[in-house]
Length: 179
Image 1 (tube, rainbow, N blue to C red):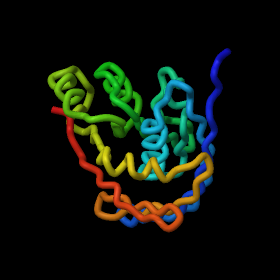
Image 2: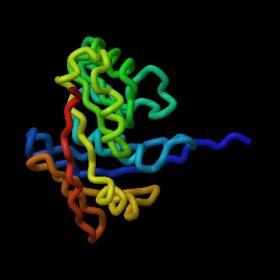
Image 3: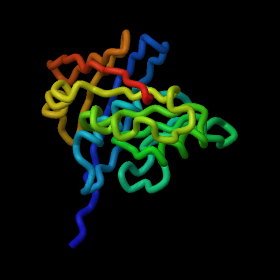
């Protein structure tokens, strides 16, 4: 018998002081059976960090040729290709050709992956930021989550302050670049 997706609900008060974005978001996220909790949570955090008009979550790991998150303008043209995970060079190249902006949010340690991509043919590789969360802090954050979550995210100076119930924690982000 095939497993079905697990649905998570997120009610998020977003305050991104770096970009002047202040929103209340209600997200219903389907976690595919083959998707790790880390991947799903980074998908949600990336959505918040990149939030703008026209942003949408795709089907995650089962989205095929689409990124985990994309942004389209009013004409339907893709303006941002936002990957979660450790995409290969061909996928990054395709995304960089398809959208004005590409961003990657890895869900595991990036060191080996960055070495694999070094020297690969990727359109505008130097312009693709890799925004990696501290995995220890991410694990502590994940331990506080349930299937229904109400949280506040405050973004300032490239750092995320996350509040869930009475708990508040910092989720540092380290930015890398492809070479």
